[in-house]
Structures are given as C-alpha cells and as structure tokens.
Length: 316
Image (cartoon, rainbow, N blue to C red):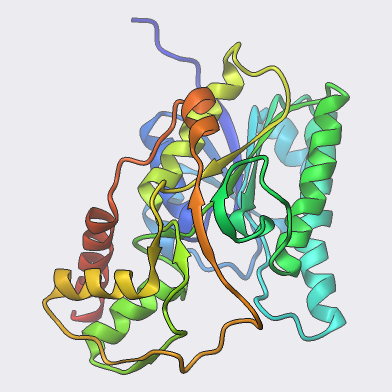
C-alpha cells in the first residue's frame, strides 16, 4: 500500500484542553504538527509530545511568514480563543477582539499569501438561540460577547473562501468535556466529589449536549479528510455535539453512580442569567451526511473516563 504523504498542520490552541488531545491524535495519524502559542501558555498538557512537534511562541517569531515558509504548512486548525464569561470593561472586549478576530484574521491573511490550502475554524453552540433542536440553520442569537467574536471571524473566513482563496469550514462545538479539561462544570463536580467539598451550582435544570473530547477530536480528523475530498464544494459549518442532552442534575447523578459517592451540592446557589432557559438538542444530520461523523462515546462512558482521570490525579 502506498504511504500517504505527510501533511504539515499548524495548530493554534494546541496547549489547551481539546488541542492537547488533538495533538496526540494527529501524531498517531502521521501528521506533522506545528504548535503556535502564546509564551505564557503552560505546556503541562502536551509535555509528552514536545520532542515530536515544532513549537513557536507568537511573541518570539519575527513574522508568521517565517513559519509558513520554513514548514510549508498545508492546513491550519484554529482552536485558540479568549473566553471571558462576564466581560466587565472595555479592556475585556479589546482582549477578546484581539484574540478571537484580529489574530485569526492575520493568520488567515498570511495563510493565503503562502498558498495554504485549508483552514479549519472552531466555533461554539453559544452562537445560537439556546432552546430547542439546533441545526446549522437555527437562529443566530449569541449568548455572550465571546460568541459575538466567533461569529465576526466566521463571516471574514467565509468571505475569503468565496473569493476562492482558501478552502475552509467551521466546527461549532457543543459542551466538550473530558480528561485535562478547564475549570468547567464537570471537572468541578468531580473534584468536589473526590475532595468531599460542597459545590454551589444553579438549579441544575439546563439541558446541554455534553460531548466527550475523543469524539470532538475525531470530528477534526474527519474535517481534514473532508477538505481533501471532492465532497468539499464551498464553505460549510457543522454542529459537533452529542445528539442527546442531559441536565446538570442528571450529570451529577451519573457521576455519583460511577463513583459510588454522594456529592455535597447546593442547587440554586448560583443564579442563571435573567430569564435564561437553556434546553437544547444538537441536530447532527449535516455532520453525519457530509463529514461522516457522529459521536461514539456515551455520556456514561465519557464520564467514567473523565472521573477515573481526575480520581488518579487528585488522590496521588
């Protein structure tokens, strides 16, 4: 069998939660990985791969052109982003604009200049109205300013593809979770359970499509193949999420069943946004048809993997 030619992939956000898992998968699939990151980013998640990838700090590179010319980048996977849940000042807004609009726009321009063929962008389900079954045609009603910035860059990206400058898609992720996660609800629940500390949450009735990181990673691998195929005709966006939704209360109960422990929890101690009702279900029809992607890890299996990781980490 003829060996597939190596593809050079430039990855932003690779030191983060999803990016660290993606690096592992890309290396297993014989891709060459270039990690573009901020100097301040910690590398604890990817320390085992440092000798196998090329790493560049944005602040220390004289120009992005240098990286593209040296490595002949074929594909960009853009995962990096600045998320501030509650922006309280103009400085917060400027930071998100810089990271989520200006930087990827610059990256895109340099990519086109250097004949990069493909750009895989990352969006969020927070761009939609958070109620009901959500397809790619659902109403856009950004939940916060972070989602606004994601929408703004996606419009720029789409314009570039319409001018035939580059092939691109956006994957809109639904509630990723798993090992090495950020301080989000599932790790916080697990950590509180293991350390026997009380946790304060909302009423716990939000229904979200929690999606295991392994399934998220497989969507990026499918996206690379899609852009390489004749099936790609124009810019597309895809919802990437589990096709079942669960409430926070259901997640807590599942983790309690896995751990055989009882969580000390204060429901309603954290307020939702005013008049907030989040009850969604991800429509996967487009991703299944065009990307040939669907989630394979159930919530129970994904939570077991996640719980076991944190249990070992916190009880060493």
